[in-house]
Image 1: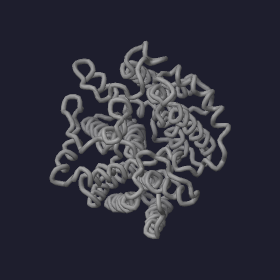
Image 2: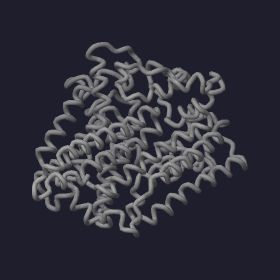
Image 3: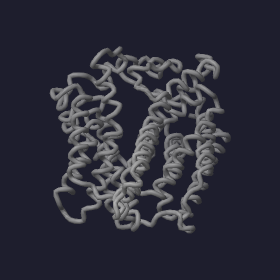
Length: 457
């Protein structure tokens, strides 16, 4: 990768959205730095700017078989425009200024989040376990799967295979809800209790599917715990949040480094832990600056898809309809998706063995060119909307919806726009169905305001 003066200009320009969103977050207090408005800009910056900066600062070669160096500048410019679009979209939804008293105080927030009941936790945990067993192919595939990672993902599915694939899609919102409930159960119990112990167990259960598949996102439920610890406990939750993030990074690192050496399986993952621990101990501090260690990097895949715009002569007229069609809310097993050019797996010759996903912003550029960044205005508005609801009506429902949006941020760096918008769709459905459900019963609340307390979410 050649660092030109134009590249440096783009790299330094990338700090501008960070400065703007940090200033906005500062006006809201510490909660502003835990908002989707702030986090979305940070995720995009890490996904598209961090690796080029690591290359520039370390002087090392960027060793990625997906990378097309000639398109890095285009990727930096597009991601800069995308961050600008996110900021513009969030500006359309006024934030809750702490100084104006719009946001709920942390103490009030903690009191208005309903306490998690043990029976709720057990029910959702049971659903997660059932979905996990179905998704991996049955009990006999849980410990040591007979298939390779990614095997069969391109095969045509019929009958029960279609239903199984739907369960694999639905397990994401189920595990997100379980992780949220588990984290709240842990944080709300000050002493060791059965609910607190079950909370830790539920947090592990919500990670099982990702651990089984050696996913880099296997530790994401612990990131949720860290987020809620900071959101609900403030400074008192810093230590717990730091420990949770360290554990999340460790769990994800095992999956990322060992996925090519083992079949999927919980037992195989456990076997890889000791080997990976010994390898990690031998790493030098200089490896921190290797761009390959940026788990959230999306630039390499973006440049490969951008190259296909020229190779495949992609145009808005040809790709616009497939792009919009693929955002439909129906299961793709029953309403098939339209191809958006050749997949990266097909381009790189790994189809049938290793799946290579296309980042959401790469699809935007492939379809609309630089104008695709305008689409991020809508995404920014959606994030700002749920930021506002989280501030105004804190509770279990708004927290789950908020975390659904939170999950979409890393998904968008490694998967399609459809995959990125699925959690947003789940959040919208959960939120508005619950609101309608509450609205129909508002007049029947008892004198103690029982339903109103539940709706504070």
